Length: 566
Image 1 (tube, one colour):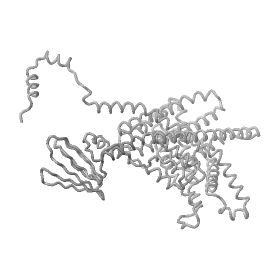
Image 2 (cartoon, helix red, strand yellow; image 1 turned 30 degrees about the vertical axis):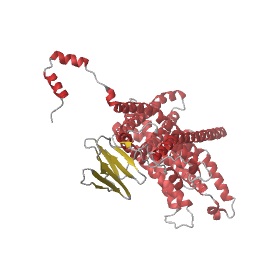
Image 3 (tube, helix red, strand yellow; image 1 turned 90 degrees about the horizontal axis):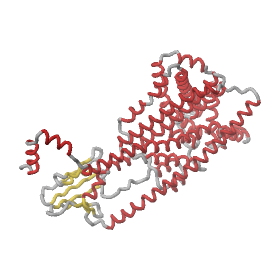
Image 4 (cartoon, rainbow, N blue to C red; image 1 turned 180 degrees about the vertical axis):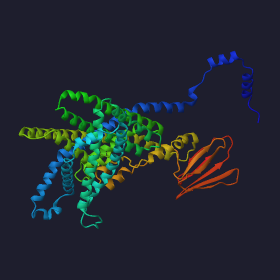
């Protein structure tokens, strides 16, 4: 076939072009970006998402940080009082300990076990010489300390994950109903395993604080700079791989926990250094710039990491609002009278926080750095306890009120967004027999990947908040949260087979997925070609009619039969 005349004219023009003509054409040559309007609009939206990510991330991080603080302060404020009430209940019952197992509630049993773990581990940690540990770490080379700090960081994440399983196994073993078949080694062995775990994890965190203290006290600050540069390794480990929404939620929670963990470590370092200089306030202003530098580097690395993750995986920045709603639902449901778990335990599982080892470490450092010998010291300690209790109550009230406000706003947004979709569905049902153009359905086919990504989110936020607050078990709450259907904006999509429109052939083909079986049948007739796709128990039929002078349209009848008219 001969090329068009325009191509021949352009070819002749370039052959006869002189140097001056080429120079002037380069100066005056123009182009129209609007011919690829959709592509440039997407790139502009990515830039806006990149700029919105730090703000949305900080909203989620600040809210999660104060939830971690609330769970940590619970150990020093309300947990001792709850343990005291449980012990008084034991001694006020007839026969003392003989019938205490029957009358104690499961929450009280868990509180007593937490108290036993804290007392035993704190007593053992008081016999560890931190001065010898400090000089042992300080005598090592800088590169060894850098490798050692990375090993401690990895071990801390592994122990945090496994430690939650150990503590949950202990609490369930101690509170499991006697009527069921019990297949375990007993409560006492589980308690010993939990004590050993808390001691090991507490010593590991103490080593982390010691390495950080050595970095602060080094003269050239080289170790501190190396440890700060270690944060950029997180970008390399999370950036250049596929990240879905559920994985992003775990990364965001881990970053919030890491910030809180660094705040506790820096507080321990400041207390130990202030104790060495007899609490000279001038030395505090020497430590604060380095401490703020460590926290600032952590925040900046988190901003860059999350911004590029959203860019490369095409995730909107509004996803952090859904993450915040999930934390708000956790706090709201854990405050009910028939809650399935304590809020501090639920936050610890969500964030990967380990409050028991951190509490033992903080008690070990404060007991050696701030000795109590006079009545005035105990009076100040009691006043400090009242201040912590007041701050804990204030923080809990603010967080709970903010949680209900976040849930209410999310519910209103969903209702306002679902009303146009319902009207569109009714309009689609009323005009079901009217032909619809392929161009109208093309956005649905192009957005199929987005729907598949949304469907991979394992924990959906349900719009049925009344069902959430009326759930009687964690299983029912999980079912309510995951029972959110994906709303289609229009058109049709197949779960078992993808539709591929080939403009050159003017044909619609069925391409089976790798994970589901599909059958494809095509007749030999040029006037009528019937194609059917069978996927599990779903069957769709297509008919193609050759009608000259008409565009290709797609219609769907009530029984799921699509007709393609060309």
